[in-house]
Length: 102
Image (cartoon, rainbow, N blue to C red; front, top):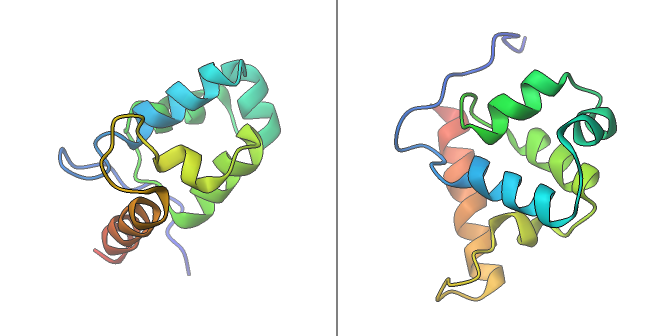
């Protein structure tokens, strides 16, 4: 049975993911309200996820990807990153999976 209480983020877990979600959302010109509507969640949850208050599960990331209508790699990609998108995506998914297990 899944715990309904969201996990709290730790300082070193997914430190930039929320910021990246916000950057992509704003770049795609999607308001907080529109993003929340597309995801079927309250605006406060979108805000919290962008602020790294809650740890994001893989299903949360899929929900974001669907709402933003961008490839999942776009969420993890940093413009100045030295890794190509595929290894970067794998690394981010691995970090997310490890965080979800703990």
